[in-house]
Length: 102
Image 1: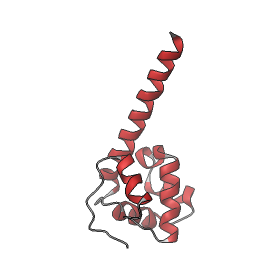
Image 2: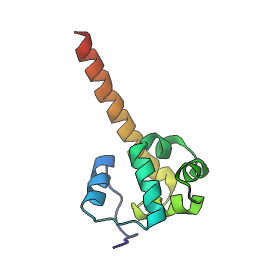
Image 3: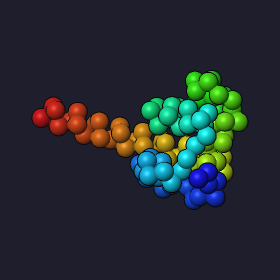
Image 4: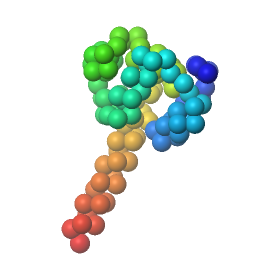
């Protein structure tokens, strides 16, 4: 079911969980954007809509449809959970590096 009224997920991982449990389904072109953004969260976190579209081989409006389908009103608000995920990954990576030094 395509549901644009769904509340935004509070985190990257909960968003991935919603997709895995099929709470959110994407049209084929939007799924290309989803795969790219979940494989490379830094793209949605920092790149322009047109850069993401070019990398996914879709239009900018398809990127914005992805953002709407995951529950956000615009790309700026969607960026937060992707940036938070990057921060979390960097913290985990930093802790692992620190542990390896001991």
